Picture 1 (cartoon, one colour):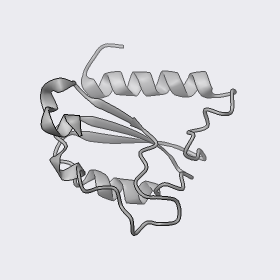
Picture 2: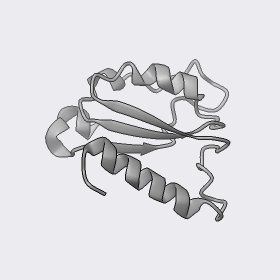
Picture 3: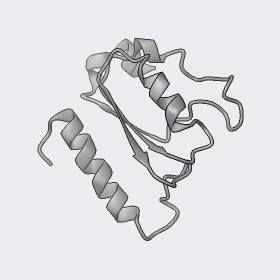
Picture 4: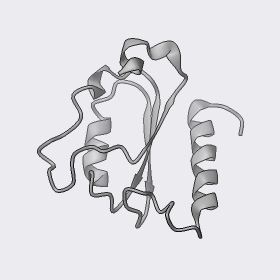
Length: 107
C-alpha cells in the first residue's frame, strides 16, 4: 500500500465499499495492513454489503491509528445504490460534502 509507505502523499483517503472479506467468508479478513495506515480515511459502506457488515467494519476501523470516519448508506449493497439512478446525485453530493468536512476543506 502506497499510503502505508508514504503517508504524506495524500491528505486523505476515500474508500467506497471497502471489501473487508469475501462474501460469506468473514474469517478471511483483509485487515492486515490497517494498523500501518497513517492517512486519514473516510469509509462509505452500504448497510447490506456482503463484503462486510457495518459492525465488522467499525471493528476494523479501530485498528487504524489515523483519523477515520464511517458513513453508512442504509439499505445499500456493495454498489452503494449507484446502479439505481434516483439517488445517485444525492449520494454523490453527500459523499463530497462529508469528505470535504472530514479533511477540513471548505466545500
